[in-house]
Image 1 (tube, rainbow, N blue to C red):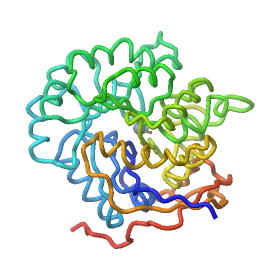
Image 2 (image 1 turned 180 degrees about the horizontal axis):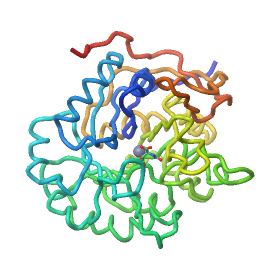
Image 3 (image 1 turned 90 degrees about the horizontal axis):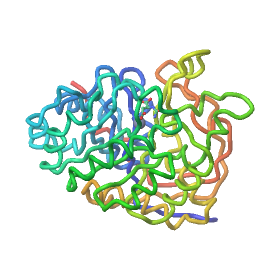
Image 4 (image 1 turned 135 degrees about the vertical axis):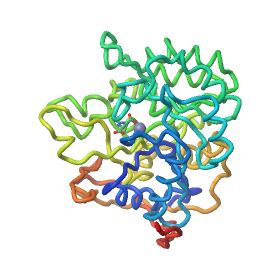
Length: 356
Ligand code: NCD
Ligand code: ZN
């Protein structure tokens, strides 16, 4: 029997949602992941340390022991350098801020309209040695949806990196060869997360034959040359590429609308197993641990997890649908066979935290 044991992995980009959906997302994410960086695009968004603190308590009330939720605060045009200083001083579970260009994705309308106006805030992020996570796409209607990431890199990101050379930046959920090259050419202050779905699929999955909303996510799936560049980056052993699932659930009625399909793919039901499919297909299982369990922790300056999970090569079939707080959710690979299954290393089901 083929097995692999890995340092417990962390997920450096996840959407845990809120309300009735939180129980499911947290149960799935906390089964095997150690740390997760929870994204703040709730409604209303998580813009301050105290909002993150409330959200954290709710998350912990559903999570297993050993799971550590961290937060990226939502940058708005009201964020001040002073509030960044306060965050650093008071909230050690907030290692990052998240920049959403306004209108770029789900619940991003409170995001940034003028990136240059945020430079004083970036300065404070740099001074406080926090991380700036970026959804790196533009929203200009004249820029083709497939070019929005590379355009953002050229038009904005290069300048941000030049102006703030000591700021740690994560370009989130990269999807293009241009992004891979940009990260490779940058110093070790600039890194990127890569999702499982962008490694598994190209845009044919979304568009060829019939239109399939399950695969609609942002940034949108690109052509297979880009997918290949992402796979090469993920398995390369380069420490600037690490795991961020961008697991972003939407109930079926929001995904399968005739018009207005919500962007996002749910992958937390099989977070690490989906990456294993990709690494195994490239004969690169020995590189999975660095990508999933070491490089992100090193970049965020957290200690690597000390415990492990063990996976076995064994076929299993993903549920066709998942109960999602009373709604239905279709996960990625629904009804399909995966080749790797976690055998041991579940976090303890004991809960450390009870909501008052
Ligand atoms: C995410 C969501 O639904 O919150 N959607 C997505 O397609 N990835 C937001 C995001 O990360 O862009
Ligand atoms: Zn996301």
